[in-house]
Length: 356
Image (cartoon, rainbow, N blue to C red):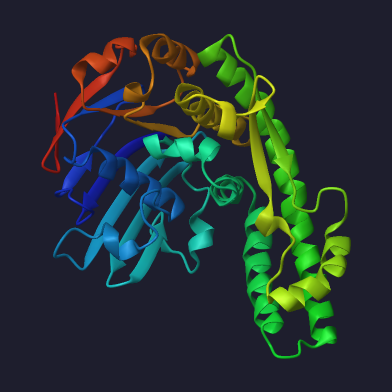
């Protein structure tokens, strides 16, 4: 999968921007706060309907603007995809190959991207909610069944919690919500377990390629470990009524990163945690290729500033030549580890992008 063209207006600090990257490595240079990360963010938002920097879509509009427009043209192994996003005063409209999409979920998976940013260290050292968000984002792009189950599960969970906050929750209604929570929750648990097992093998391989001397493993820790979701809901019903919230289910699942038999969240160094987060992203590349026969677009935001020279060299050795890479950097010297054959260079300054 290759990004052929990006056109962007009114997004963050970017001017009317047109970006035509090559199929290999694209190095986007520039000082801080010039728009390099915003360029990657615009691609991520169009592809996934999510930003990695904010949950408030109004923040994405340029200062003083009431809307923005993003258009991507991507070459997949099976077809071309033209995706347009128009956002105006809170109203978001999306077209795929000129056809309006009635639901945002219908656009997921049309264009696949993998982004690594400095904030991704939170995958390892951050909260369990961060890792669940990662699972949901990745599986929603790969599995329509997962996305459907996730949407239903969240809706049922909200309704069950509303019922629990009632003065005297009706037992029959709780039974009905429990039945739906179990049905959709079982899909999430099954898909997450399979995905984590598969991702874990690939992540261990990628981490070894970067770190060599250390061993990384991933473990899926479902909240209902040792009992079924049905048993967990039944056993906790009395306490749920007292606490007025659902205390067990996939909304409390966890993934554990372990480096050399120790929890990475509490025992790993900053460098190990960064390498582990990066290894997950490299594993995503391969996992998506295996499932779709297409590599996603890889976006690396200031990754070279996060790695020493040895690990940077190993990183690019681990990236397949067929992967299109968009790489941002503030320092020219940071690119000494980047394979330069076939690479294109760009400069970002005050929201303006130019080819060097």
